[in-house]
Image (tube, rainbow, N blue to C red):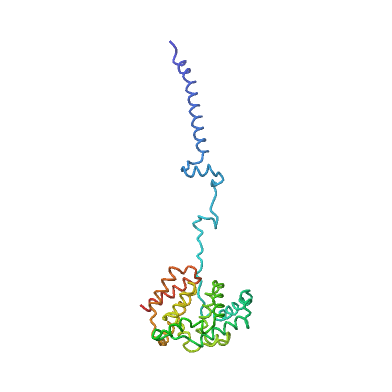
Length: 292
């Protein structure tokens, strides 16, 4: 019979071996797991395999201007504003600069005008202001409708009509600002006379506004123009009649609501190419509330 001390001694070596093996397995498992990256979702894992350089660094942070940075917000584009009375001096300068620009264009030079553009075009505008169209009882006689339909042609002549159309077609990007500056000056006739040598007869602009908004001849003329010209001319015609209402000078009693509804819808649905679209609509919305 073996003694107890020898049996204990014989069991000691296997226990030590098992303990070392267990310790080694635990150490391997712990350090191996800690060195592996955390499991990725399938889509992320596939992306990393396809493009290893896209893997984020451990201390990577989003810098200002980096897409996706919640602290970086897009700066909204300012809405173009129509000129106001504070811009009156600049309005005159911009009108003069436009005509200086025209003088440098080959299609203007090819026409061999007998005066610089600002003088020549001012003559044409004065001719129109001095001979406003008929806007009342237009349908009483066919001859009146025909005269209104050819009003601009009769006043300006064929060559000047073609010149005006060519300028409108070639300078569409500048047309809105030019018309906005001209309209601003209509509220300050002294600037017209002093700076542009242009005189506005009493009621002439009102007559033309009614012509474009409420006569067959005026509507027919606008229907033949491009959408930008049609919408912008209609917009300023509405403002002129509104001013006449405010001054108690709407002699023909023209109702603005139909024109407001029509133009607002047209700009909302087809006015994305207008530089001042939002400014036009803001004004039209205000006027629609006043004329409900």
